[in-house]
Length: 145
Image (cartoon, rainbow, N blue to C red):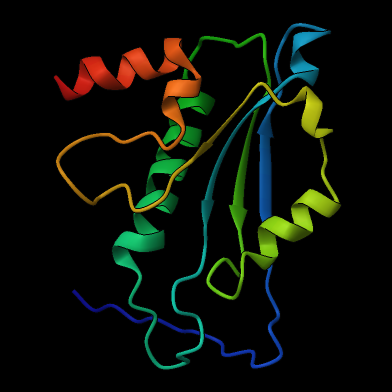
């Protein structure tokens, strides 16, 4: 196998967010989406090596896998599912800040935001602030047990 990686170093901080959506079927609920997010960069100051396999690439890989699985399933969801890959996280969450200033859905309409961060780390599924959402947190507890 031969593998090649090409990176571009932008000292002025050029970055991008990538957004995709699977539209829900319900006329009202589709406007109240679930967002799944991850970040694209890791230690982006080094233009020779981007060593972020766990920090960002694990979250990106899970996001892509979930998007593919949901797109292929015959199930149709009432709510839309939005996938966002944020750029410039390591440079001060600039991609996230940009999205908050230019959202495609008003914040008060978003029903859940699942952020995939370092998903390959540890032996359990963690949920930051998870206990604020008891029904969802029960799923994590069950899987961990």
